[in-house]
Structure formats: C-alpha cells, structure tokens
Image 1 (tube, one colour):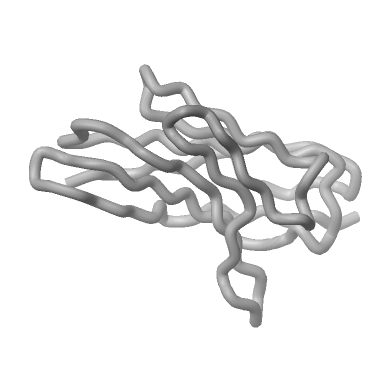
Image 2: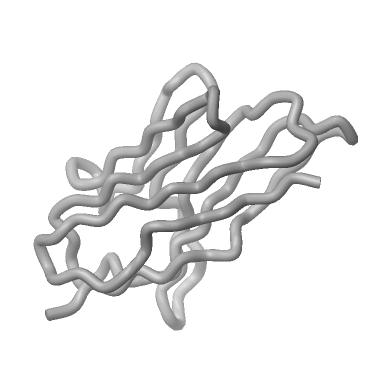
Length: 119
C-alpha cells in the first residue's frame, strides 16, 4: 500500500502564490515519475506538471513560466510552486506518483487539494 498526503491548497488572489506538497509513504521501493494533475469544474483532469526520477520536467503550456515542480527523493515528496496565479488555475489539484512497491508496480493519486484563485 502506498499513501499520498497532499497539503498547501487554499484561496489566493490573482497574481498570488501557493506551494503544494505531496508526501508518499508505505511499502515503497522506488519512485519513477511524480506529478500534479488538476481538474476544474466541468472539465477533464489534465496534467499540470511532472518530474521524472532523473529530474526532467514537463509542463502544460498554460502553466509554463509560472509553475515549478520539484522533488525531494529522500523524503519521497513532490512540490508544486505556483506563482502569478490566475482565476483559470482554479481547480482541485491531485498528486500522482508511480513506481515500485514491495508488492509490485504502483500508480497512485492523492485525495486532492482545492486551489481557488479569486479576488
């Protein structure tokens, strides 16, 4: 079993910043990719950013230059620094981690954290 615990969401004004964190725990042997998806009301879930074990990152065009994803491998934790937030960034943000546990391959989503950008 692998558990993901997210934190850092909230309400922020346009132009503001938030930092999301997601810590993975459980019977983890190794972690491959870590990422953040988001889902706005009435829309499909989309990838916002991801980071591979070697550090290569990938961003949705809509967040490039504003969001930065990073990871701390010693803590099995992934972060998403969100700057210059816009109302269209409002969504539930889900952490996603895949890798190998003691029981084999796994891929897990967190419970989600709400980010609301509004004045």
